[in-house]
Structure formats: structure tokens, C-alpha cells
Length: 72
Image (cartoon, rainbow, N blue to C red):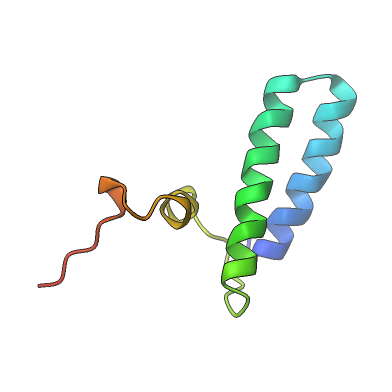
């Protein structure tokens, strides 16, 4: 996706499809991703790029080892 807004719209459409199919696992997965995307957008209103899963994870878990940034 080119922007976070496109990703959010796609996830909303996919969520409705998954609900119609009765696919609970997919509904949970998309719901969690959609929530993360919306939270990221709220925290970074000036940033329109589509964040990677790692960026979303680090936004929610900045203390995780995977998210540490070292200065040289």
C-alpha cells in the first residue's frame, strides 16, 4: 500500500468480508492490525506512509529488544 489511509480502508473491507465468512481467526487478526494502524495514525498525524509490522509493534512495545536503537 502507498499510504496508511489505503491500508486502513483495505483492512476495513477485509474485516467485513471475514465477518461475513464467519472466519473468527481472520476477524481477530485484521481487527488487531486495524487497531494498531489507527493508533499509529493518531500518534503520527503528519506521517502518511504505510508502516511496517515492525513499526507498529515497536510503536506499541518501545521497550522490546527488537525496538532498541543504539547511538554510535
